[in-house]
Image 1 (tube, rainbow, N blue to C red):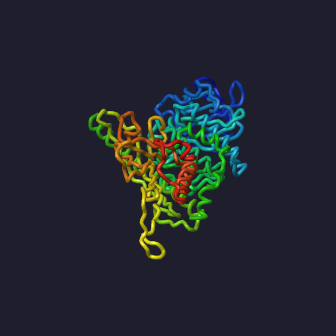
Image 2: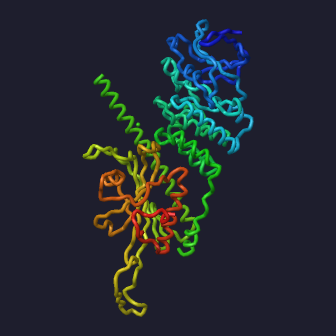
Image 3: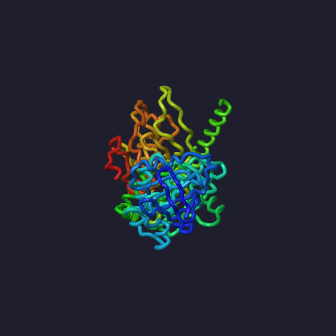
Length: 509
């Protein structure tokens, strides 16, 4: 059996005794050292190809005490064989073995794996895994742990003869990896989203030839996960094409960790009741231009995905109303029932805001904006009686004498306090002269200076009436409930301007 000498010790391994199938970056053999059996991983990269580069990733991991990462016992280049090696403990099994044996995992089992994986990603927060897949998640000492951390980066940094696109596992490769862009923690979040499909459906979201899988990762929305609606919606966010629009690791831990206790949304009783009635200088300049072009492409991609997501959300909202009553009349972007009508202005792109005259940057970085509004129709008073006589109406006008419109801004963006790009809802009111005939709360275009000023410490005309509330993913249920409640009031003629601004929380429940 071959003997290798690495940084810490001498090891032997049996080339005839493989532990699992070969991977994109290497193969693992059963080996031994002074303290017993070990797993020896030989990378598909020779020292000459890597210009004898230091294996810093092995040194980094070997120097830490990690609870959710498979320990690195030894690492480095063997001078005699001209190869790089990692030495690790022998683990019980891989997640791929688990899926192969069971076909699919239960929600509880999948949740436990996902939380262990996320804990590993958070534990080694300065390193991006880049090749997260079931074969690199191993069972060791009572929990699922991550293996092969950073090997992909070592190979990428070491040689131009190999590329990540030639070595990554197609079924779990994020769009930015296929495009040759720099991976980030969002790349690992995407791979975990693919793994959720594998655990719960028995297969990753995309299949076929490598070309077909690549095209799907780049251009095709992942199929619905099925099962738990809240988890399915969240995994959809993890699989967004644009890295910036995926949830971060902390949010993944929070949502996935609480998914089992989420309750199904009950039927909207009020609406049902009302329905009965009704991304040197020349080089620097070129780099800057490329960076700007990348940012613009990323914003365009964000815009496309965000628009699709919001349009689907509005479709589901309208479907709830139509399901409640056959009397509801649905147009392209509006639905009417009784005295209530709900209308939607489709998303439009928002240009990046520039600093204000005081050189203060905008509070929000917004990519897209839309408007959602509900209107209560006025009472139509007949000019003549049933007998044809003119009717005189005497006295002051009342709210029912005019249409009343409640509108809100839906915007897709992020802020310094929350790096997640998400759809959010907010609305405004004003001390100044009445707008839109006195209708408040009202919507503002996100590109409007008043919109950003309302969220800053600068005094402006517009004030925040409520929000901003996150409305996508795990928060869609609350969004639907809020607007179904407002629509129900409009249907029955009870929707009027709130008597207090900002609007109290209880009014929106």
